[in-house]
Image 1 (cartoon, rainbow, N blue to C red):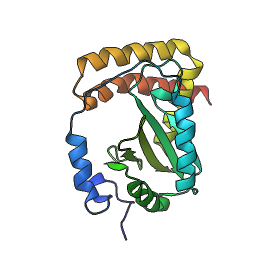
Image 2: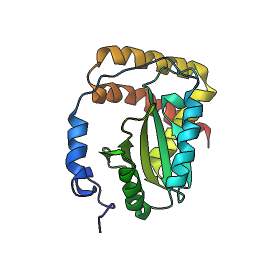
Image 3: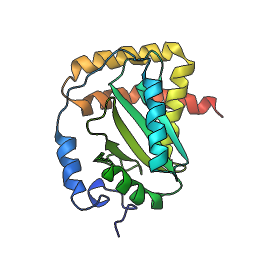
Image 4: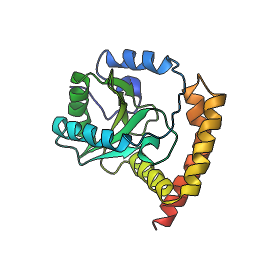
Length: 195
């Protein structure tokens, strides 16, 4: 039986998946931003319905990332968090996603969140599996909800994304890393507002 409790991505993936994950993580796809597409919410609802059939044990399936924020410039990629009852449910859900053709992208940040990317679907999907109570999932929802409620913060984030996409055209890791300070500040503000 595979173990998903271990932290390092290279130790927590099925045999063969770790190598595929590493190969995919080392490829350098361009950072492509597009204007907001009003079809993204509908695409999410369709994807969510399909995922609920595949993973009926899911506690929630949430649209996260920039495509979940009306008007936001974004990568043409629907980001989705799937919250499962516990870490013990990750393995079975992984098997389902792999059987559906999703590519494993690993647990890059040792945060009990496993990423998968759709192959050949339009729009592309990046699906994350995480257990209930996961801090990364909580932070993603806080960030999304804060930007939806504060259009000025959303506009500032969109401008930052456009600038960084120009600077890090072929470096997705650099693009993401340089957004971190802004994202962390918004999450801290959002979580403080919830208290």
